[in-house]
Amino acid sequence: MNKEPDYIKDISEIRNIMERSSRFMSLSGLSGVMAGIYALVGAYLAYKLFYFSDEILYRTISRGVVSDKVLHVVLLALGVLVLAIGTGIWFSYSKAKKHNYRMWDATAKRMIINLAIPLTTGGIFVLIMFSKGLIGLIAPCTLIFYGLALINASKYTYTDIRYLGFCEIVLGLLSSYFIGYGLLFWAIGFGLLHIIYGTVMYFKYEK
Image (cartoon, rainbow, N blue to C red; front, side, top):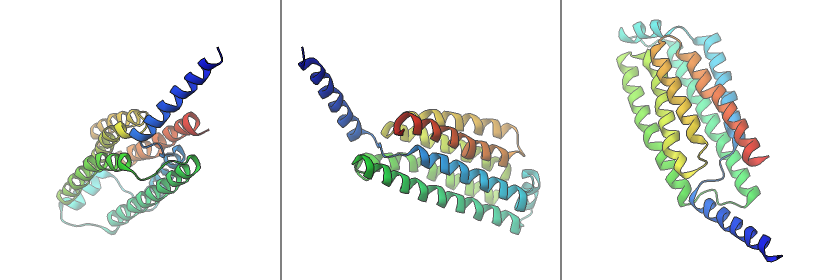
């Protein structure tokens, strides 16, 4: 009678080992929260200091004139991206070290590749639209391609990330209809949704 719990414990440990070997488990919910905070701060700064409507941006680029404000918004977005990636790597490293996971292995490589393909495609597409003056569609496309990237990478990490991907795609489609509110949808998609997702992941898997 006493051996049954031991068998159950052994089976549970085997399942955990198999899951760790097939999925990237070092992804931290706190990194999602911080990325969301960075995005909200960046959106606020862009709105207060540099931002003007997508319609004005469209006319400006279509005339072949790239204003300093547009460049400042791009640099601000890149700064937010660098902060988010750096924080994500740090929290993932800390989690891997705490739980004795291998942070960089074949599973992590597969996840990065599956994440990078839609993101790289979307990034090139966004640059083409930017060069053509199609500014109003940049926010929708970034959200949609990001959502596709999350869904594609979810096979190699927590499946919960897939739901975040679906939400990003839906938000991107809404943004493509409500042209002129790109910054607002960016703030919701990369800011608010990341904070909600990161909080849920932290209390579900790390707390």
